[in-house]
Every structure is written in C-alpha cells, then in structure tokens.
Length: 341
Length: 250
Image (cartoon, rainbow over all chains, first blue to last red; front, side, top):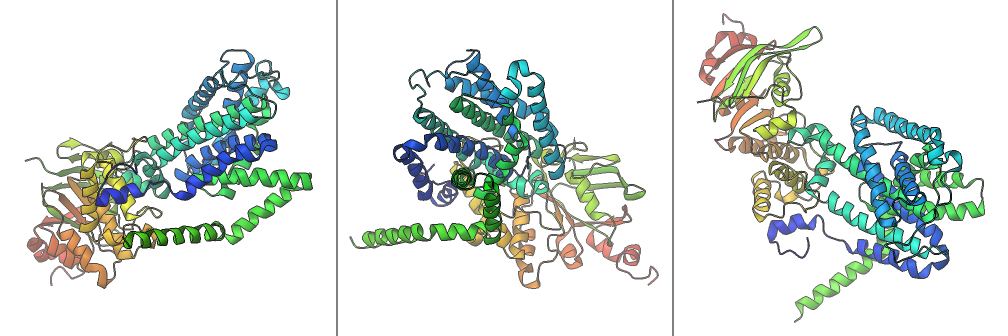
C-alpha cells in the first residue's frame, strides 16, 4: 500500500505493486467514455463484459499457466443463472443476481477444477473443451428450462439497486458493467500482487520448484481456477442482464476460442491485456464488419499474424514513446524544482 | 539425540532397474554430511526420494524422528527439509527480490493471503534484505532471473532453499557448471551456512567434499558402499578402487 510508511527495503517490496500513472490514465479514459460516446453504449457495454471475461482467462492463463478452451462453460452458467433468476423473478435485483450467478459458476469451477488439474497442457485443453461441450448439451437437453435454441426470452430487468432503471440507450447498462468491471479489476489487482498471486506466477514458471519451496501447487491452482470461474460467471451474467437475452451460444466453442484470441491480442499476465484486447477486438470487429461483413475474420486473423511478427513489446514501445517522453520531461522538471529551493 | 535425518532400507526401482538398494543412512544434527559416488550411482535419485519428488518402493524416511515417507514435497519443506537442484530450477520471469519475497512469505504461512500486499511486516522485509545481501544478490534484485549470470542464478538457487529455514538442507551439486571465476562466491555461501542447519551435500568435486564434510557416505550402484570420516574415506582402499579409479591393491 503506497500510503503506508515503509522504509528502505520494505519500500522496494511495496514498489512491486504500486499504481503506475498509465493505469490511472487507462481508467480515466474508460470513465470519459461515458460522456463522449453516448451513441455507442451498446458496443461499450459489450466491451466491458468481454473485458471482464478475458480478465478471468488471464487470471488462470497469464498468471497460473492453465490453458483452457472451455472457459465459456462458466460464462454460460453465469449467463443462464442470471437469466433464469430474472425471468422467474427469483432474484429481481441485478447486483444480487450477479453475485448468485457468479457463485453458481464458481461452484461449477471448483468441482471441475479437479478434472483440469489431472494432466498437462494438452489434456487440460481437451478436458476444458469437453466440460464446455457437456454443459452446452445439457442446456440443449433441458430446453424446457433453458429455452433450447431460442434461448431465454422475455427477460425484464429491474433497476440496478432498485434505483437505476435500464434505459433504451444502454447508458445504465454501460455504467453498470463498467462499475462491475472496475470493482472486480481492483480485486484481481489485489490478488495478483498478493503473496498468493506471486505464488501463482511461480507455479506458472516452474511447478517443480514451487513445490520445493513449500507451495501446495494443486491447491493453489484449484483456488485460482475457482476464482476465475466466478469472474467468468459474472461476465456471463452481465451479458445476459445488459442484453436481456441468454441463448445456447453462451456455451459455444467459438466463444472460448475467441476469448483466447482476444487475450493473445492484448497480452497475458499483466491484467490490462484482457481489457485492451477486448477493446481492440470489439472495435476492429465493429469497423471491419461494417466495411466487409463477410470477411471481417480474415482481417482479424491478419492483425493477429502481424502482432506475432512485430511483437507486442515493440508495439508497446511505439505506443508509449510519446507519453513516456512527456512523463520523463515532467519528472526532470520536478527534480529541478526540488534542487532549487 | 534424534538424528536430523534418518533413512531406513530405502528402495526405488524404475521398471527393472533398481536405482536405490536398501539404503540406510543417518545425518546427525548439525552435520556436514557428503554423499558421493561415481556417475550413475543414484545420488540424485536419493535426493528426489528424500525431497518427495519420488516415492520409494520400500523403506522409511524420518526427519527429526518424524516419518515423512509419504508426505508430498511441499509438506516436507514445511516440516523442515529443503533442497537445491543440480540443474537450476528457478522462476525465470521473477526477479530475485520477488523470488525471495515469495519464499519468505510461504515460510511464514502467508501464501494464501490474497487480500494483503507482499510482506507488509518490516521484520520480513529485513529478512529478505539480509538474504539478498548474504547471497550477493542485492545488486541484481530487480533483474529477471533469466537475465542473471549463471553464478548468480546458482546463488539464488541456494538462497531460495535457505529462505525456507530448513532444519535439513539437501545440496545437489551446488557448484555444478559454475565457471572458476564465480566459484568462490558459491563455496563461501556454502561454507557460511548456519551450523544449526544439517546439510547433506551431494557432490562430484572432491576438493569441495573434503574441505566441507565431516562425514562422507559413498554410494555405488544405488547402495551404501562405505561410510566414515573424510580421513577414513580417503584411506579406504575399496573406495579408492571403485570411486577414485585406482586398483584395490595399490
């Protein structure tokens, strides 16, 4: 915590989790989107819940090294839970329903995590994929509950916290999604900079050594997988609540695969990858599909190939060149001021 | 006094090959015990059995009188047994600062605290500092481990094991592959290990073994071949024959 007074080495350790000014800028820009893009709330809302969904994958893939091709399973559980709760008026208040949906996905995540722990990367891909397919078929089979291919229809959302009604422009829904994203992002940031988060990074790097310094590897992986399932469930619930719709494709393989793609675009293991990836992916999708509706995926593919060829670090340097020069100039001026009393 | 580490009739087979044959060994409290043997004698298998990376087919392992034979690796560390690796097993993306913070926070049992920042306790920060300074890592503490020179990585390897506050430390060829110029730091670090830590050193380098150990066990073909003080081992004609490659009647 930056405000706690720590000396010398403690300061060095605290430095590891300090807020960077780039992060604050990022969230300031996100807030400003509320004011400046009034006619794009629908798109922005989708970006917000997708960002949360990708953040969830980043927690297990970027931090703990668990690959998954079936993360849509938890998204789907969250989406249907939120849909059913609202449709049958079991839990009408959206935030409460959000928690219930998140915890349902969390429960599924906890139970299936033990399957995922059995085996290495390729096995994990197959197991996660299998779990998502299974859930999709279950949702299909019990179509009297889930609505089958037509999905859940006729969902009417009550006001958030009983105060903010969902409007047709999607302003409430965007602010709602963005707030949830921000709160859960703060939580994720706390987690990855904690001793627990550091142990996950160690496990991703070298599970053998992690166990040789006393880390119970599998238990830690179960824990983060369960937490990530909660995040994915909340993302699914947000998508249902903001669109008043849930259909079978919440479980689809495409969704899981796109998710990996988005995370790769944004970059793994620094939390913002998911958010930036979601933003870039959705904006590209929006621009490209209005320009060439049938072939937009070709261009997404091209972007991905370029990204791999050029390298993310280099792109990051290009983007950050301007801001860093400004930052350095400001710092230099600050130091000059301190010297001259 | 209970021995720091006691091994009774340990057996490990890989398919038809017996890598460890009915091995019994006692490491006394505070001992500097070396385990030597020619290539393929099964030294690393013994380390893996002791540290819990492998399960023995028979036999028992007692750590200060407590049976740890079936404990998983991480639980053995918590019971007071830690190890280094012959080939560096480090966290490539983490810096030495992060690595040591992690080891210290795990030892303090804070590993599951997802809600708190890293080592907010000043005493713990001091400890991290001391470890980094003692192992000459303070100057590179913010460099990712994968960018460190090999000798520094080797030091981190040992520092990481020490950070767990072990009662028994298994050093698996600590100086392996270290260039001559960086060797001194490693040897100094090994020599400076606190006396309350009992050490089992697995080593190839005879100079290191004879300068460090107060007791030596010789492993041949997975079985204990000879055991004694460095003098006894140096004079033992059978050891010279098998291990030092001299005929027994020389």
